[in-house]
Length: 351
Image (cartoon, rainbow, N blue to C red; front, side, top):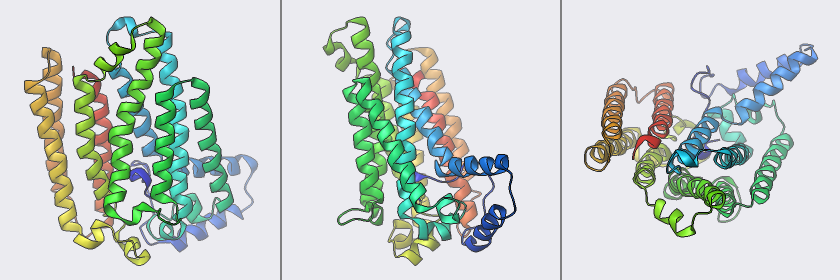
């Protein structure tokens, strides 16, 4: 599956792409080797973790926390209401993340046997029924939290994310937008760059507004803060780059499945260069914002310094990529995700 740019956690070794059969046989052999209950439980937990796509879980946790911190106006906002709103948002968002990436795996079993044989549905560790049960259960759990919270921004964010996940992955009439490069990119961009920023920001602001008795007008004035506007713009560029780059390592499986991604249509070299250009544009804009838009010296120093360092790291790392190697492209793709995480760590400092 490739929903939301998903892939295996960067720190975990993975089988070579296309080497599905040996991996599947190994999984079956382990299951038939007389495991103890403890060993079986450990194996099921490991499979579930892989099913959740750990790096997307990390990205969701970091992004929700970062955007929530942006919603703080001053130290007086830090309190029980803030903590509760963040915890509610995190639990609901992580559950929905599992549902969305799981849905993609349910519909991508055959493709994943070529591109990602380590995923539990592709390897046979989980049955299709188990996968569907996890997808449905986590979606309902997430939506239940949204309803119970009474937060309209949170509920709208969860519903919008789920609908886009269905449009992206489900093999139904007029759906499975991942087959169309522009629609696929728009799905990822909408969730990562817009819905997450605006939805969770306003969820926390709503909770704080109710808690401190502020007028609603104040919340919408704050919604135009520098950090939120910059973060949305930066993540638009980054999300487009991720949406394009995620298909580069999977070009073999996509060609066999007849999925005409931009990587298949335009070639690896063009897409690789286009993605790098988008990422560098994002870092150049960040440095400009730091120099000309930030209001305090420490924010200016952090914004300019950190983004300059990350931009240089991107240039250096991109020079080592072997475009003919799926593993090399995959490694660089995971590096882009690390840059994505890093940006959310920096976002609360842009004031």
